[in-house]
Length: 385
Ligand code: PMP
Image (cartoon, rainbow, N blue to C red):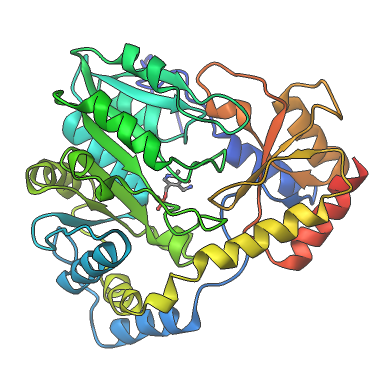
């Protein structure tokens, strides 16, 4: 095809091919074990698949209502009340989205205007900043600090001014596996008190949290809930990342604005899957065992690495484990990750890519949402490095 005949002023000039695509391609080329990608290598529930099939066969194959099918919004409301004692009205405060990615984009585009500032903590999940930039906002970068990647609230307080429109938080946190505590929530409450700041709380790993830690959803804190959009994803909770199904909880006046954006980004989400998830979600057994399920995987992976030279601080949530290679090499994270893929046949993600200006901590992110066979093979390689 002949190329577009003029200069294209990119709206995202600094954004190239994502490191995830690069590492996966490299993993394929070099036949490496791929622990770079954040998704399970095992299948979802047979029951859930048969429910989807059932609803397709019954003819639920046309557009769903814009906010999502009512039975699913009702199941989400029940689950939220059960998990957090928070009450959201299915009609006016819950919206089903095409995964968390759409939820995040629609939320940012609904509230962030030209010149607004949005506080983002790095290392940060990669979809936040492009969404802010595409909507004319300015990302203001906070830094998670220390071995446990904590938010420095004193620094954050200094970043807040009359232009601050939104603060984005993420717990359990991708890529670090850190979690926000009740104390963090109290600090956030103080910082946002008497402001018009909206909190966008990315809680996609809400059910993947370990060591009996309770997930501190913003919806547990009424003073935070009133200014928050809570984002979650069934992709993480039901091992169905390919289905792109998520939801947003927010008070009515925030939901009204959120839906204005959502209806023109995607309008509505996959109908039969919504009905299937509505039924599946009713049985608490389908999600309450997730912390144990993934904790067992985290422990299995970490135990298998005991004799390796990597330093391990066990992840507190998500299905990611960071490994510190400072005892092994001085190389930059990206160089080291590429070398591990090519030479040792194991792919990971350098944490430096989750910063707008690369920060080198000698840390790589590995996904442990894998079967034991894959984890054994990966650990065997990592122990030889
Ligand atoms: N937020 C975080 C922190 C994530 O890790 C992911 C998935 N990688 C998403 C949002 C996007 O979720 P979804 O696949 O439901 O769009």
